Length: 163
Image (cartoon, rainbow, N blue to C red; front, side):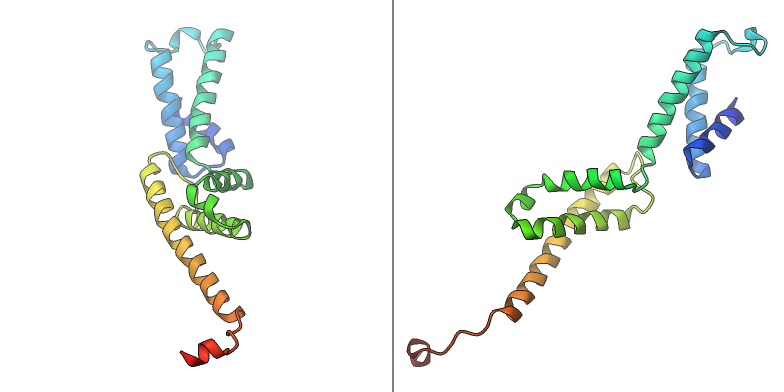
């Protein structure tokens, strides 16, 4: 049975370790659903058993997909929407918000190139905290340099010369 589940996981497009987790999930659920095994069916399962096995496989696939979320555009957009809700983003000018959120997303993707797996939640939170600090500092430095280069010096007036 394990080999069957392992082969089915190929359709989910995962590496060997992830496929192994999927097969193990299916097998453990099978043992719970059928503690006495399936040997009484002589290779032909009733529809109710087939449906139960399909639901169990779908549940493991859902868990599997949630734990292996490659950075597809939809996932990145969801991540960015979450970042837009952060309090510091609301304080930024509209012209800077997208740049800050993009910076956060790039830092997270760089840290987790294959997506965030279940069990990585703490590392993900730590990465986001660090990225928030780094991106804010990066933007502050960038706009400070721009401000210094674009603002012409004040013309000398009688008040400034006298000081």
